[in-house]
Amino acid sequence: MFVVKAVGLAVWEVALQMAPWLLFGFFAAGLMSLFVSPEIVSRFLGRAAGKKAVWLSVLLGVPLPLCSCGVLPLAVGLKRGGASKGAVAAFLISTPQTGLDSFFATGSLLGWCFAVVRPLVAALTGIVGGTLIQCVDTDARTVQPCAEEGGGSARKGLWKSVATVFAYGYGTLLKGVAPALLLGLFLSALITVFVPESFFDASFLGNDWIAFPVMLLIGMPMYVCSTASIPVALALMAKGISPGAALIFLIVGPALNGASLTMLLQILGKKCMAVYLLVIAVAALLSGMLLNGIDAQWSLLPTYTATCTGACSSGCAVTAGAKVACAVILFALLTWHLAVKCVVQKLRMRDGTSARTADVRRVTIKGMRCDHCRSVVEKCLASYPSVQEVTAAGPDAFEVRGTLPETLAEDIRRLGFEWVATE
Image (cartoon, rainbow, N blue to C red; front, side, top):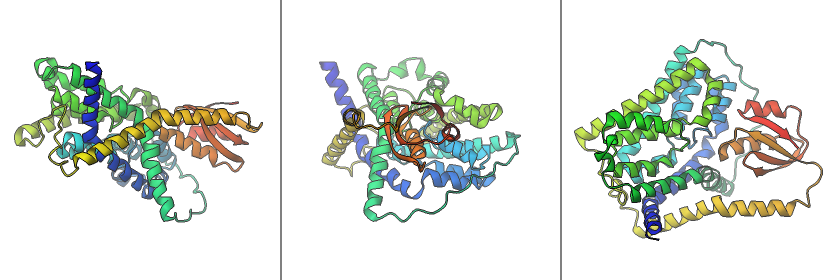
């Protein structure tokens, strides 16, 4: 019972510091979705292949709140739109490492100096990686942009825009990172409770020459989003690991994951893929050394503890009552997405089983690893004129009411996914 209480208190302490800025970050990301949609990014960069496209890819990619698998469909769209491999690689490198949500969450837990360093590293890594791949790529063929869909949509009303902001920020985006975020909070709490103080200082990981490559090897195959990795990094630093080693984990964890490597190989090719991996690894190691050097010279980073973060001084403007309210709201949203919503959807599906007609078909698609991926596929299915309704039927399936075209498999493949079956 004591252990359970200690873990619960540790989770609550981290959530108190993180929740206000995290909720604000999700709101900012939802607001940004009104002006910088993935479709606009894909079309705009598709026409701008070249050196300028590398910089533009980074400029638009850094604030986008997308994970390492959620960015893949956009990368496929960029490539189809005519963007060079350099521009696509710059977008793939810079986008998953940070975002508006993770920026504010990093500031709340690790301090605002750390929060500024993350997007700077993501931007520089994207520019260097994209430029190198632009030089290495020998495939000079130009892909003609896909035809534009006709007709612009009407301007959204105020209330509809507000609903879109909240639906994307606290719905689609939060649901996509909810499992990883909750897991990150619990991992942070477990490290806080069970790992002795200054454990890493007294062990081999207290030596950066060992800790750096270890963090690199741990982070590369893991699937962890830029926001969910923050509390884990905090707990590691509270136990003695250096900020530079933690930064390596924060870079390579979101930027790479084993599940996305096969698709990256398909998008970039073997030679460019090797450059891609090498750039991220070298940039992570150099960034870790540079951060430790800056901290040793100017002491810009705070002393990290498990219960009070370096951003406490800058976060004092958020009152204790507001922190509690935000933490309660955050856990309520996580509970809704991870438990209540799933039960409600299952009950709706069960109630609607008897009302189904013969034209309802189940479509199974592989490669969807987050909510953004599923949203892209769902929009594709719903865009067919002969389809009346599309509903989620599982992590890799949809129920479609209407008639599906013969081009379904090809359309899904172009998005970066794989059509398996239609029943």
